[in-house]
Length: 217
Length: 218
Image (cartoon, rainbow over all chains, first blue to last red; front, side, top):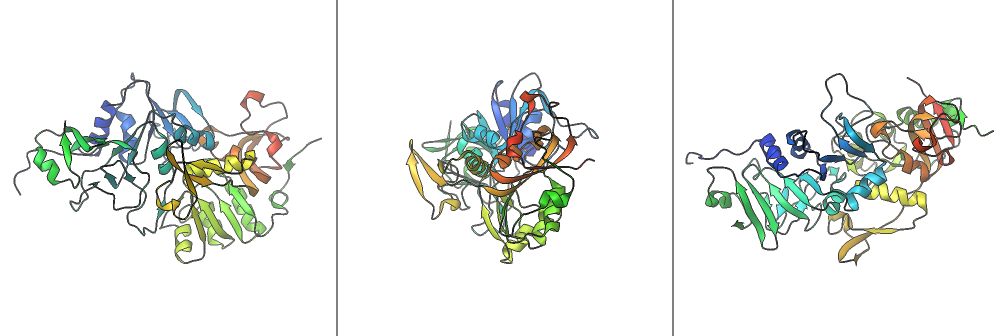
């Protein structure tokens, strides 16, 4: 293989890239994995309100070691804090937020995204013995916009940006944008439109790593 | 005088029958752990358990599933490497996986007399197979039915003798809606306060839904 002239983003780099695109005032739910770390890259003077599916409106900075509350956790059951101005609601209201179109943005991890905006993020095979839907289906269909954060390829080099998802779906036709370690792509009626790439990566190299046909802005 | 405070776990669990549907609140925080062990001790069998997730290898949910007292689990999330996942794989546990928001809404519907509702959540996915759906306002939706409990196990931070409750921080989660959706609502509370001590604007679960309150300090 030729020398690699580009450097993929690491997981935190993807999170930081997403954070750049979140404006002040948005109400945002961050899924488990890469998305959870997005809030760390939103500067404190940009007021973005983060929602946790278990009834938290306004997640604050991570608690200092030793000052965690056992009563205050996020969707991944990690200890969190509430920022000034935050609120608690019960579970039906919290998912009413998700399902009722109140979130400006939800960022989820995924195994695959299709060029028509389908997302697969809860089962690794058609007969996956895990049954880990959690809140993903509600968040995927309910938020005003859904962005996905994931690695561009599997560890074995396989494609995650598909013409049609091969894994069980979380929701159909809902993904608006995908952030990977290599590029940012909008999902349009004509398929994936690349709007940003890491420095040094060529269009041909990105297409070679992608099953779906890419267009470039 | 209305007094829902009971003196013992045995009194709190009295009368729970085999075959009951038990709604168990909690999302890590807000799980009434001692009541789960009280239910195990009480011994009712063939239970249907409704809770957010199926737990891990230990902890109250794993422990009650391991006893075999639960024949069906309704929840949003089960790990393969958990007691729930193992019992399901072995054919010893019936499993109904429900998207978490649909689960919460079915419980709210159960507590509010809503007989069914349509939601886009899950449409076009594996959970829609064989289910009734229709297009509403241009979106494909699944028909969902309410969930009610014969029993709810509820966690509180504070309670008074009428059963008015507060829940601390994110420990609120399923507690208020499960209390509304069940016939026999049993609460474990960290603190007992005098009637009138809780500010009326700050009561998270009204006592009218609650039947029994057990004080479990510490």
